[in-house]
Length: 67
Image (spheres, rainbow, N blue to C red):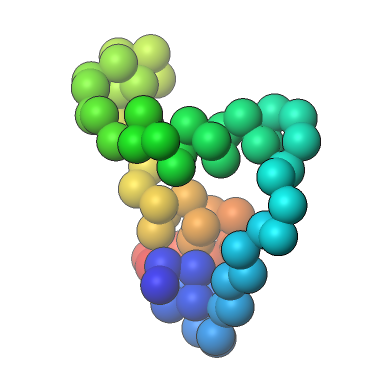
């Protein structure tokens, strides 16, 4: 698991017992539907550079480099 690997410790995941309201619930619904699986070059074009990987984003959020 990326979060645990980068953090250097075990990270537990718990499924939400009830639907999550608001924008986060909407995004979770999109992810579960598979709508976010399609990859395009759109984000790279908007950013003007390749997007970060999940590992890079987690490392940056944790203040770690070279992960």
